[in-house]
Amino acid sequence: MRDITHFIDGAAVAGTSGRFGDVFNPNTGEVQARVALASAAELDAAVAAAVRAQQVWALANPQRRARVMFDFKRLVEANMNELAELLSSEHGKVIADSKGDLQRGLEVIEFACGIPHALKGEYTEGAGPGIDVYSMRQPLGVAAGITPFNFPAMIPMWMFGIAIAVGNAFILKPSEKDPSVPVRLAELMMEAGAPKGVLNVVHGDKAAVDAILDHPDIKAVSFVGSSDIAHYVYSRGAAAGKRVQAMGGAKNHGVILPDADIDQAVKDISGAAFGSAGERCMALPVVVPVGQKTAEVFREKMLAEIETLKVGVSTDAAAQYGPVVSAAHRQKIADYIQLGVDEGAELVVDGRGFNLQGYEQGFFMGPSLFDQVKPGMRTYQEEIFGPVLQIVRAGTFEEAVRLPSEHPYGNGVAIFTRNGRAAREFAAKVNVGMVGINVPIPVPVAYHTFGGWKRSAFGDTNQHGMEGVKFYTKVKTVTARWPEGLSEDSAFVIPTMG
Ligand code: NAD
Image (cartoon, rainbow, N blue to C red; front, side, top):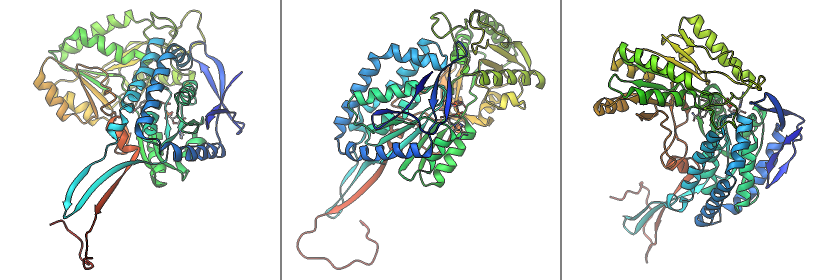
């Protein structure tokens, strides 16, 4: 059995806790490796290495740190095929989608290549008589990231790309379900010229997460995962005096107005609902057609579209999506489908019982479609995170705005229409953090920022872009004067510049 080890201070480090997690190949259902699960003492060793490394790394000028990012990008590109295959073998998404996972992460690295520009401070000459004021952004020290299984390359790069470029050292605690790619990325970061200890990978479960949240030398924690755990991480980290940004789950809606290009909307929604087996926080599992006719046409065309979908192994270039991540997750999705039936929704297509010949033990799940889903149903309120599309019919535009706005999650939302005025009104009014207009998965580009609202994010700073720079730095503001000649009298009144 292959062991997946920690990566601390530039080297592979075997786990000493005696605890391991199984890493499956979701295509075959077999355990292919075991990953070490860290104890608090192992985390301490990684933090100590990071503290040492950061003191030196922060002194490298921003251009030198940026050059490491340029080299890291080049190395990830050179190893793209190997990384994508490794990613697919542990996650189950198809190879082309794994390349997308890596590419979207690399786009944040590209942003980080411009870090000297982003780090320039502000300056006011003559803020008072002979007084200049300037500000600078300084690194925090050691930051940590705790990431989910569904984007094992992109989400770690969202975090460490910026954290390291601004001069921090980083501890990554990736998902224990697909831990190999994060380790390869850390190895490549060393090869790119980052000093040992600047990027460390510590595997683990709740014990490692709690150790991160309580460690006094970790100044900031970035988390992405499910909402209950996001809230827990936010509360415990903040109580320990840390900066915390904690992104949670999602239930994104796609609203279709009667004037939309329905064929295009069906194609877009099919990809956004079933791509990566629905295991994306920006998937589109709820569709809201406005008006009876829109709903009927959408349902008929989506049924035909679903019939064309090919579910296959990750390495099948013709497959649209692969297995889900684990047997337990597949069971959870199947339970939600049963709950939908029991709650009274109409199960139009049932993906349970799907079997792929030759891969009977793989964690495959066919696409499912529900109609007549109602807002009060648990299957509507909760995140399913599988290849299940739910139709919630709306009578009016106002109702279609209200549904995503009143939903407990608020990550992304999309509207499909040819009416610019309606789209503009929708974008302005909807109570959701990221909006797509005829764009089904509105994940912002790397130089903008990513973040949902309501139960989809706790904390006030988004991922990547300038928000990321802000999260991983603290501002120091200097007020300076160079007096000439005679000393002035002491001032006992608060100085003003008036
Ligand atoms: P998860 O919450 O189970 O795990 C996320 C991380 O938390 C992992 O590193 C895991 O080891 C750790 N963890 C698990 N249980 C813990 C506990 N009890 N205490 C402390 N830490 C714990 O999430 P997942 O299943 O890996 O990922 C899927 C979820 O992530 C979905 O809800 C999805 O919507 C969400 N997600 C959100 C975003 C976003 O940006 N909003 C992006 C991707 C995924």
